[in-house]
Length: 301
Length: 272
Image: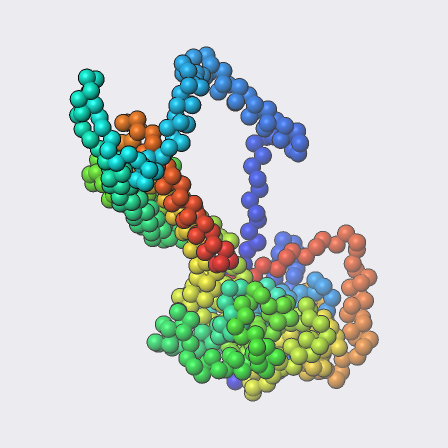
């Protein structure tokens, strides 16, 4: 009637290492050998190079970054004249207007980035939830099913968002949709792992206590399992969402929409001051969301 | 009416150690039984066999007219759980629910139809909420209803578990050292509450007791156990101090310093 069992905690795999300090020293030695190997091959291939004049380049880049383009909206020249070599005026530009319209484009792109991260995270969480329930060991799902779910999650975690993005741009075309799906497919793995861990850390004695009152399986779930895991799920969701906002700023590089598109444009046109504007926006966006999500997560504990 | 508990030739063996060996045990409905004995006497194991937390490989176990065994139906199992109230150390409150919600869990199995569905959202009928509040108030926790269970003290948790038991209205109560973590005042309170739960006619109370002073409070029939066997079984009035002393002394003589520690009890219910 009952499956009473002392499940032995699994023994750590020793790999034939000596115990204690000697074992740790062996590990450190292995690590040192690995580092030496990496460095040696890098040098041997002649790839350890900082270019011809790194210092000049560094100073020039820093100089460009020091004056981000959005300052021009207020301080830029209202009549910037472009002249040919013989002095004829080719074109007159109002820097303030040009940069103001660029800033508006940045605003739109920021929203798209936020959109991609938000929808992608939600989709990922929804897909990961059932898989996490299959993977969590304490729910005792039949092994083959658990292995299959674990396989799906591992693959999705192993493939980077950008790689998913490249594949998806080829399938659904350029634009935010590819970005949303790329974020969703990669984050699903992360969510699955986090969700499964919080299910595994559940107080099973409390769940058993609910079951012992004669409650039905659904009641056991909604009273014993759900109240304990929901706050953790919300916390994990905010954490991965936060992560995805960082990730989705890059997705534009491969044509999946958002700030990344403007970044790749600024880089290819060597517009470092605009790149500085964009990076400012990225930092502010990520920091604002970080502090917000941290506060919510602290309130949930 | 059938017996509340009926055991025949029950043995529980772990490895080559006999944890429990009961050739025959009958407990009638309405009886109040206390089990005493030294550590490792098999008291808790006996309680777990009756509570269907441990399966007896040998013999027949009948509880409230149903026989426990591998072949029983999920619905039967649920009905039996509903009628058997457990108060044990290994069974916790749900930490994130309030004290009141934890008490209401005891009433879940009573809900039918739409009420059962609504309970999924922790939405309970008004009269049940009032009953839960009354149960908490009776134990002196009237103002703690909204406190989360993980913010309660150990004694308060035990009382909430008791209130949950009260809501469950079981016909058979199994309590394993219900007062072991409590101070003397709380011990009395919990014992009285336990008896109050068992007050209704036909309700059977089976308690494992360490504090022998509580015997008159909790039981009218005492069973002395040692080494997995029931040594004696008699009414409260016939239990003499020397009888009790013999039970514990024999054990004290047996114990060698290198006695292996008892494995930690693991309570695990198979999903229905």
